[in-house]
Figure 1 (cartoon, one colour):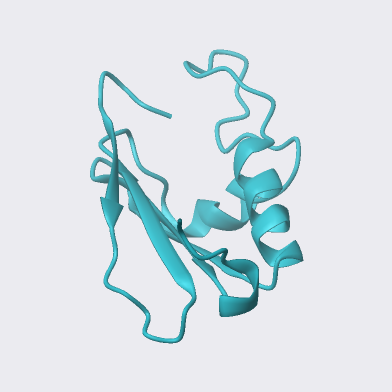
Figure 2 (cartoon, rainbow, N blue to C red):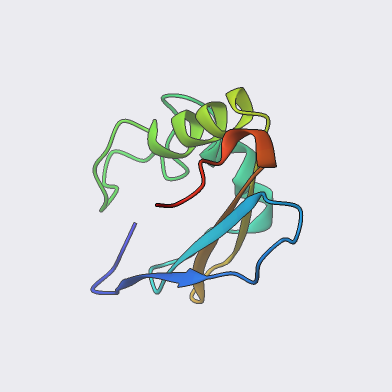
Length: 100
């Protein structure tokens, strides 16, 4: 959820084991720590009020998490209100194709 912000992918250091880690940071409104479990629940919006300012189905993070976990990886969210959000995905070596 961006409030006139930006999204920026950034490289992560090599894991050394052949796995892959990538992170995307936004400068949006951020998510409070106590709201992160809600944000990861399918069809749930953190702001459930009728006057909410952001649209969506509440599926993006939950689908991303399930997809990453289906490949044996993990998804981590670091966020704070007013500071934006960083989502980091780590995939194990067996799920990463060598570049060519």
